[in-house]
Length: 237
Ligand SMILES: *Cc1c(COP(=O)(O)O)cnc(C)c1O
Figure 1 (spheres, protein in one colour):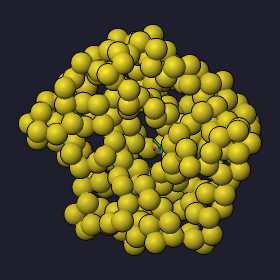
Figure 2 (spheres, protein in one colour):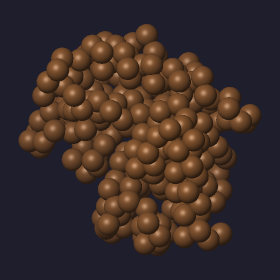
Figure 3 (tube, rainbow, N blue to C red):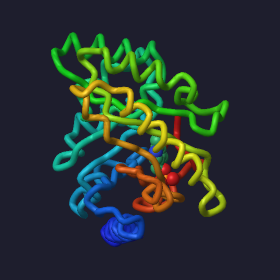
Figure 4 (cartoon, rainbow, N blue to C red):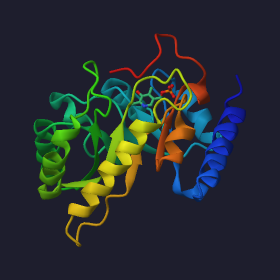
């Protein structure tokens, strides 16, 4: 496996998918999903051109921050977040992708208030209504978005989804299209002075090109950069 080559290949595919959709390649951020990777691999990825890392587990985030492994890149939290671990995440990452309940939103708001900061967040939506997955149900999204916009120490930036592991090419396009509609709905309901909702975090190794075709502004890619992980496929929760 050649990390440098993989980074370049993924960047090229992102650019091609963007152009095919009539979009600018620069509109799409590549987030390297670094779960289970070592400090050494993360540093190599950054040396190879990665500018954004996405961490899933609080424990790994804390460890990599402690060794300054992300130096030269921005860090996002992309995994399921438990309310009791909010302290270790808020203020340590530039974006939390996975706020999916009022309870978690309030915990993030409280911690950001304590730190005197404004924390950028995305709301995670369970587009495919999968029992096993995090994310709020689509019908609860408008209320949650409204609550988020009222939190003075939280800034809602957009939405995130983890649709089913795609087996067939194109099988997740309908979910990606739904996400785009959800985002448009939220933007339509915002007041004019709240205009920072522009992020659609969707698409992983198996389907990021489809996600870009449907409007993704950030794709989270692990396997296509780092190779298969040493445990069953799919996002770790
Ligand atoms: C692991 C993970 C990814 C990347 O998955 P790959 O299929 O390896 O590209 C993306 N998003 C989240 C939330 C993840 O946990």
